[in-house]
Amino acid sequence: MNLEVKIGNMILKNPVLVASGTFGYGIESRDLIDVSELGGIVTKSVSLKPRVGNDPPRIVETASGMLNSIGLANVGVESFIQDKLPYLRELGASIIVNIAASTIEEYCSVLALIDQHGGVDAYEINVSCPNVKEGGLSFGQNCERTAEVTRALRKLTNKPLIIKLTPNVTHISEFARAVADEGADAVSLINTLIGMAIDIHTKRPKLSTITGGLSGPAIKPIALAKVYEVSKAVSIPIIGIGGIMTAEDAIEFFLAGASAVEVGTANFVNPNTAVEVKNGIINYCQENKINSVDELRNSLIL
Image 1 (cartoon, rainbow, N blue to C red):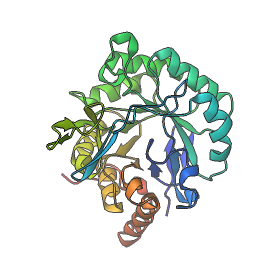
Image 2: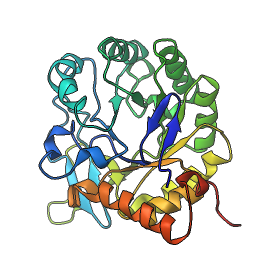
Image 3: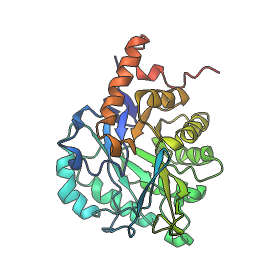
């Protein structure tokens, strides 16, 4: 069976990745999972300078999901290159670095610094960051700015650019078209939905930031609909994200048009989820005499 997935000039050995922010930098799970069985790791977001993130509480469990307002806490690009990248290179899975920034110049600086050192297979660009030059509205909620980020980064690298799209817009397909036109090799979707939780006893929000990003099984139906919408708008590969807990969940994303998937919140419940999802996909394909995961993509019967 052929499990390979091609994204730009990167070949994933299988279509199952772990999502940014849910797997650290890989080293955190080395005693819990055989990372070499994964198609790839999407690292925790890397920014130009270290970030401590938001004040706690910044994670709240919700019905069938989780709210987080971590605030992109990370070690910064210099420490990432020095302390994290050498280990990542030895894991035996494709390494996709997620980049976060508050200006286009910062996006470019982070990518250029990492690109000089090698050992990275692709970049996932988190455009759900506040654009400080536009009054705090995230890049990902402005189609022109999302395209501008993609255009600037495309000039700096030949490695695959994957733009991670937010669902907190009216028509996500417009954003997918915009980044495809500017040279993106793929899109990943969806990022978290904006949500809120309240403690009725204290009458206070459960997150220090009041609202946060909702992830987990609760958002899977929305994620599937967004993947399906984008699959009708662009020809570049789509990486589906949102509430994937089982192989069945992943297969739904393939049928809706995804070429690969990222397992996120499930990693907090069971760090081995992504491997189990991959094995379940193999079993499904064998049982249904499917020779390639590509045969599943866009095979929804209407």
